[in-house]
Length: 271
Image (cartoon, rainbow, N blue to C red; front, side, top):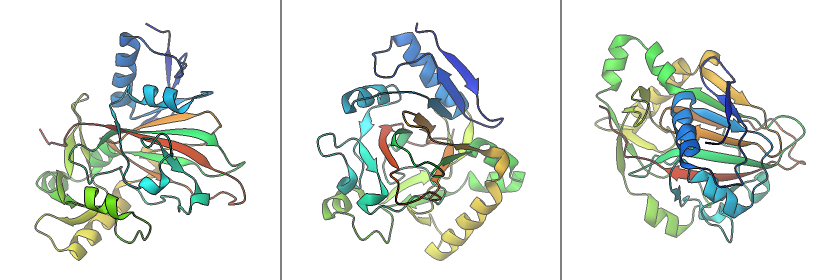
């Protein structure tokens, strides 16, 4: 097993992993240890990585098979399982709290971000512990959430989504609003407000109002780790028990380029 060290970054979530070169193949014990560490810490940071697209895809497979992303206009030309996050491609920073690709039957277990070009200041990524968010809610609201399900589709209002992506990925998918983590066994709040067409049995307006209020009450500084990017960082986010957001507080004359891979997970269930 490769010698690795895991150091907590925040009281609620996040850990730095050292002693790992993700450009190299890893043995089975190391792969298992990293997979377990993600379920425990919910966000893993690997500094000083130098990766080709092939190496990055191999590293991502530690956490699940890479999934095709549904904004194909932003995918890397020769490696379509790698998405490019780059404002010069016309993208706006995803500054609202979310978890990725909930419009899939088996949504991502993890989102991986690789810092290729980093601005001199700002442009961080924040991750919130949705286990802690659930635990802090009143008991009656936790019980209520356990009965609710969301109907998920592609985000509305994106004018550049390709017709083939709409055809492939805009079918309604239903998920529980509280899900049980497949390896950790704990429960967490689970939804993407931008992809929630409605809570099952609710109107779209009532659903949106409730989810916005819920986010405002749940996500507090005590459960948030904010990653300040360095070139060569890889940030792995557990999509099964977190939400994350980008920060657009950087100079747009500078480049902020991240390579994104999403690794397929299990179908969300509440046990």
